[in-house]
Image (cartoon, rainbow, N blue to C red; front, side, top):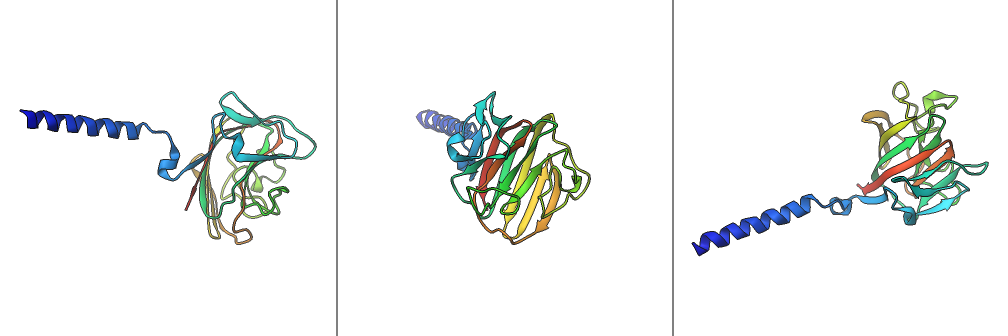
Length: 201
């Protein structure tokens, strides 16, 4: 009887431990590093430019700034990685995720890879889901305005892939930039980042 009781207790203890692991929300245990998690994460970035970044309403967001775009630039540099992001953009938003930036104090689409968020871009082939000046959209532009969206961005060597709301919008090879910080942009309208996480590959 004692043996049965001990075995039963061991099974219950193991089940409890597994249940606890399953409930863990820390993505570090799976190789993911959170950059933005709801209103948390501002400490992971340096602010460049004059955007009015604030942590509010379950996201890190900006809706105004100066005459030039503002950015949240990661304090760390990244080489090969996958980024997963959840964002909300107003219909008139001009934003994006800049990758492998060469100068953390000067963020441009000439010195970084920019996964664009810009539904009203005059040349829609480089609109939302494209990599500006590097890769046009594979198909019609998926508009992001007025709703929550997901980005999955992969950079491995010279291979760059953009997936927007589950649709692959870019698959290209380009070797201009090998490593650098990541930057979140506000350029116009309202942009909200609810979750941004990165995993080296």
